[in-house]
Length: 101
Image (cartoon, rainbow, N blue to C red):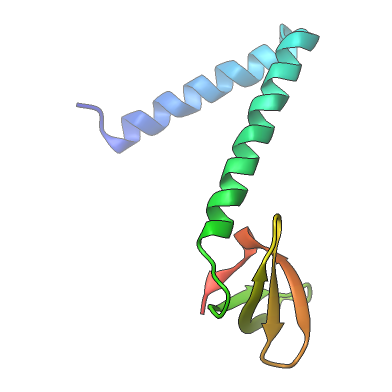
């Protein structure tokens, strides 16, 4: 049975092989297929993050200046979550940047 360390090494080796393929041998068709797969994966992760939050949930996130902002979910939109901060402002925040407060 594979240990975590062995599994990580296997993943790292596979990633190295993929990156080498992309850098040296991949054609336009290959690159387009890879981009499509990455877009699908990014969308899936975004939807998973959005599904964690509901209206009324207490959340927190780091603002642009690094301060932690806490607030309440007002609305879950397609790509972002609208958060009413405790300070009174309203923010549109990507779901992956939020954590439960």
